[in-house]
Length: 127
Ligand SMILES: [Zn+2]
Ligand SMILES: [Zn+2]
Image (cartoon, rainbow, N blue to C red; front, side, top):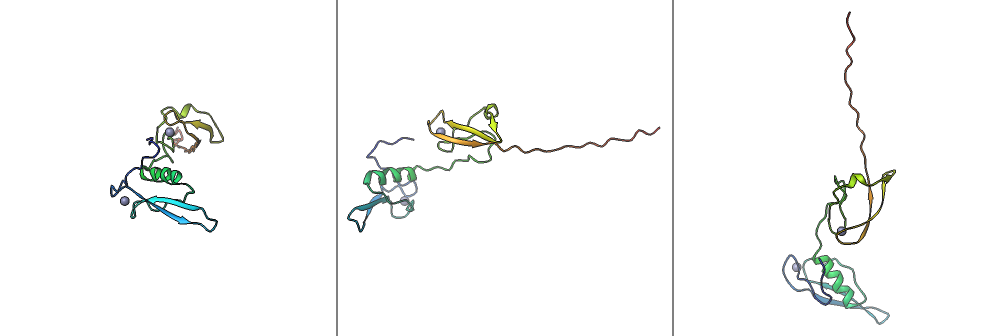
């Protein structure tokens, strides 16, 4: 999901527009952080309001993506599922970095192959 710059998302939990917190630094500059006061508070401090806004929007739109131990390769950025993961070659399990078709971001992939064995009884022929 893309956001126009300058537009702040509302807190997904309480629906409030976040407020800007600032902390003056010893060197005279200031650190900024947006938060609603209750939720999604644990963001980094940023040197500009723009970066703080970007970071807030990223946190406010964060969704959990299952991308580990999946049957198909899943983009860890946007959650797009690749449908022919088996076609990608791997080198000792490491698959070349992929560019997501949906969001265009890069990610790496690792293939875990589990080897299992089946056995069958061989009956001795009784003559
Ligand atoms: Zn909130
Ligand atoms: Zn993606």
